[in-house]
Image 1 (spheres, helix red, strand yellow):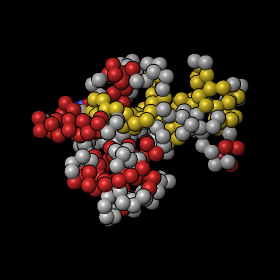
Image 2 (cartoon, rainbow, N blue to C red):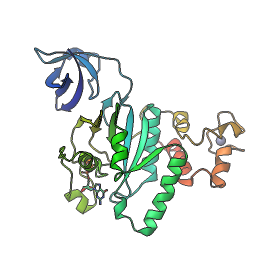
Image 3 (cartoon, helix red, strand yellow):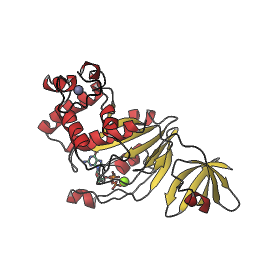
Image 4 (cartoon, rainbow, N blue to C red):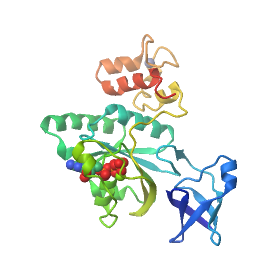
Length: 280
Ligand SMILES: Nc1nc2c(ncn2[C@@H]2O[C@H](COP(=O)(O)OP(=O)(O)OP(=O)(O)O)[C@@H](O)[C@H]2O)c(=O)[nH]1
Ligand SMILES: [Mg+2]
Ligand SMILES: [Zn+2]
């Protein structure tokens, strides 16, 4: 029978087929082939013995969160507790772009900002929108619901950013556990412990455990460079065809940063990502 893996807890895969759920095990042969079935996989399974038999080729897959066949990723980005980090957002954008998944930036906890903070955030939001990203606030529930239609979406972001809270607001019947204590202490504690695809508003949405750190797995320096989407329109004006926009002379990107057209924090994060060894 054909189905889709919608949940993984320990070694139990929940497979959905024609509206029914089957708890299945993975077959030993996958382990030998070094394939791990992922949430989001389309599979052939044995409904008598509850074994996953075959995995359909994947459109894409992420390591963190471990999900396959994703159309779009909501980068759930807290602006306070935990505080807004351009570094983290730009890192997530780079990784998601590299996997050819559409990023949707979704800011949370805007209500906790004072006037100054709000003004600063609005500037960032405008910038990310102008370079071509979809930007939501977690209060824009109708817009978010509409974007789920016929798509597989993942919610990803730092622990405590408000992923599960937003899902509960989108559908109050979900009642996913969220963390109040860690919020009071100002730190995340990984309230969500497993990945789960939830059918919602005509699509599937994955709630995932948050993270405290992520890495650029399998990406080269030029891979990282190429995901900074606003650089691409100027790069032909760099003196060197393969300019890395670092110490090269006559670099159009550095010029645009000086002119204030490319956001300084974006450029600084880029330099950080390509020059630091943190990702290897
Ligand atoms: N003030 C405010 N608090 C929020 C908002 N969104 C979430 N929170 C709070 O932030 C805390 C963490 O929220 P969660 O939804 O558990 O965060 P999460 O991203 O699911 O965290 P993990 O499951 O650990 O990855 C909870 O106490 C929420 O009530 C918001 O927009 N404003
Ligand atoms: Mg959660
Ligand atoms: Zn350059």
